Image (tube, helix red, strand yellow):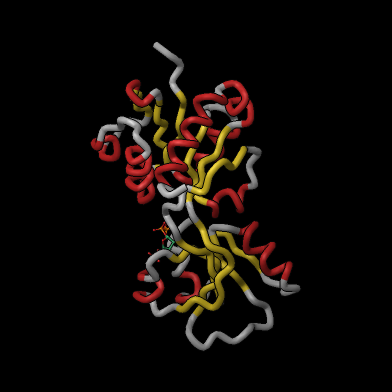
Length: 210
Ligand code: PRP
């Protein structure tokens, strides 16, 4: 059997659109992949082996060569600064990283910001010349300003529904986010033909006019 390209795929909400994109690019990937509980799924027809990973871990698998390529949010790349090649903006999972607070937020004397992205948040406020204490949380970040842990948060906004349902507002957008195709540096050299042709096919699916 030919050498399969190891693809780290994010599980969860991005999974469906990532698989759709590969299918649109002409790869024969079965629809039931996204419902499976299997963590390693070989699809020889597409020349790929999918590694179903937690989104935040995708770049780790790729950096260490456990996967040749992967799909990862720009948010994770900005936060973790991994030693990987960023090959393509896939244009999926579009959202934004924002500063969020309660309506009528007034700057505090000793501001505290809760976030899953301490590096991004620290850099953002440092560049603004603002001193803030950054508190790392792992999820449900919107709780922090509601129960007095922090006065603002830095988090992702997609539909805005979480903010709306919790009475919070976006104070400022930091940067827009989409999913990116990344590659391990050694794999990119050793499997260049396969990776480049995958890139070309994905690009055509994203930009049919190009
Ligand atoms: C993300 C993000 C926001 C929410 C935004 O959380 O951290 O909480 O989605 O999406 P929306 O604008 O469409 O409401 P996620 O669902 O990944 O869960 P988490 O709170 O555990 O991080």
